Amino acid sequence: MRRVLVVDDDYDLAQLLREVLTYDNCEVDIATNGMEAMDRLHTSEYDAVICDLMMPRVDGEALYNDVVREYPFLANRFVFVTGQASRKAGFSEFVGRTGNHLIEKPFDLPAFRAAVQDTFQR
Image: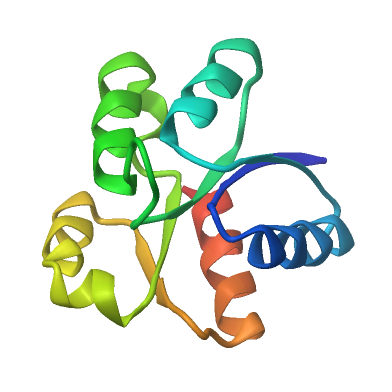
């Protein structure tokens, strides 16, 4: 069973992702921002991190940079999710530099599942 951390301040979306990933035989934890995510990463190990880019307190880019410093083995295990506002804010260039998947909201669940499976294979 794979362990996945979902980091998203949208409660409904986080719960939907939990349901989808649980159906796909994953154990899922949820954090509502980057600070909570780091707390979870300090106490648990994960196979993938599903991360919103625009969140309060610590956004997805700052979280990724913190994770790479403390847990470099997770650098290629992110799937970023974003809305149109994130794309306009230049986050897509950041994600391109990381080499990780970027899924735009609203997204197609088969495409999301494929991105997660590809991340597990890295």
